[in-house]
Length: 258
Image 1 (cartoon, rainbow, N blue to C red):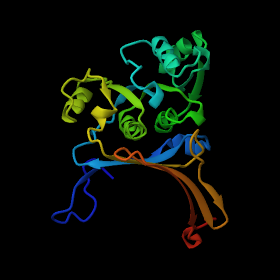
Image 2: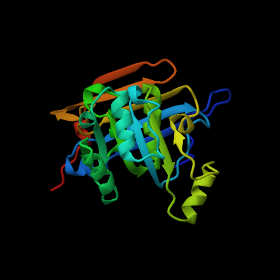
Image 3: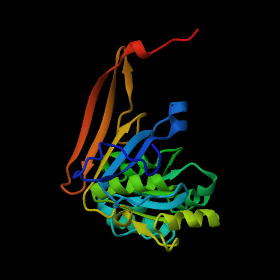
Image 4: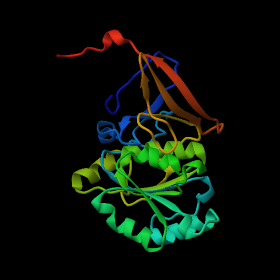
């Protein structure tokens, strides 16, 4: 699907919606059999989902208990201390998810300098942001620079879960600045929250794990069927569902080449 593509019947009188999708967040992870790859979708009223350009975005995300205590203008150490206080934890008990990239070396060093736990991941920052909202994952924060479209999907999930994400687009040249402006962002330096990225109070979010993540079990193939583990949520009513599904595989479509 391309940006702006119209799907559905488009009959008169039917309500229109925006759909944000990432069919595979973590293609390298799947290729290498590593965790954190998911497929995700968000749906809301037309015009209510920010059409993020394909550029980088600075992000910090937390779950519901730490909402309101993070600040993208502050350094990581100050944010970790604020999150620790909000969660009634020692700094040494705070777990920070940071993507394994050279650009994040300073962040990793900062977090470790005050004794915080650092959980490094390769790709899949939608799954990483999602993990911050569930205590059983042991993840308290996500920080770093990643893709802007993935940030929008993470915002939809955290809006449903009562968490918080703060972001700032990072255009690298004039062409990318123009991309931001075409997306409706006049001030490219603006720090946006989940309420700026998803302006409706009613958004759906769903994700299915492709490989194992902190929250969801990946796809398992057994003979002629596969099992999947998904999470489905809606912000307006706060309903959260985990779905275990069994899918029968059509083996006639599988061809073995010599």
